[in-house]
Picture (cartoon, rainbow, N blue to C red):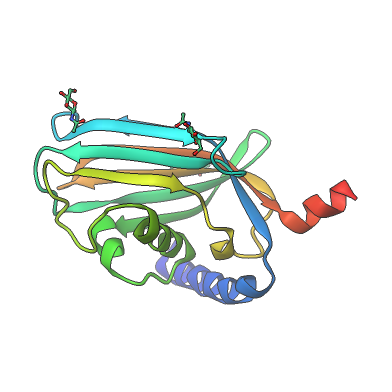
Length: 189
Ligand SMILES: *[C@@H]1O[C@H](CO)[C@@H](O)[C@H](O)[C@H]1NC(C)=O
Ligand SMILES: *[C@@H]1O[C@H](CO)[C@@H](O)[C@H](O)[C@H]1NC(C)=O
Ligand SMILES: *[C@@H]1O[C@H](CO)[C@@H](O)[C@H](O)[C@H]1NC(C)=O
């Protein structure tokens, strides 16, 4: 995708987010998660856990300890929408994870993650992440108010790759489902 197309898409997202905050009633169910640690010498005591009883939609607990301060944390984020066995890459973002700790993001995905993390994790507001500190995220859910209203009912895979100083370090895979609350009510009645 070229840059111009991407910017147009981003624009569309922003418009939809504003509209979406008025009319979207989405639930985002989390069904599966997986953490892959490619730098066990640096990232220690990793625990990743999808708890399907703590919240109606499922929630994520994660924690880790670093053996060095980490200042350079970048990577790509891919959101894939799945219909049957077909996957479509809905969005691919290059993310500076240090930057999203501190800034107010415009794109709905980093914005949602940042807003949520500030409430339920002990991540600092800026890098570096410090060595020998137990970082945790507790009961992370996806706040549906950030999901654009045009998002179809579909299964998704959220795939976050984290690189430390350009070396593959960690990968966070989450599977779930976007569903519309209105439609659920409708189905039940
Ligand atoms: C981290 O894991 C090591 C062994 O893998 C253990 O000895 C240590 O106590 C753990 N640290 C914390 C803070 O849980
Ligand atoms: C899931 O969350 C519930 C409620 O907070 C808690 O009692 C339970 O121990 C958690 N399960 C796991 C596997 O962490
Ligand atoms: C989605 O993007 C990833 C990474 O860029 C790529 O490996 C994968 O093949 C893409 N999948 C589809 C269905 O386009």
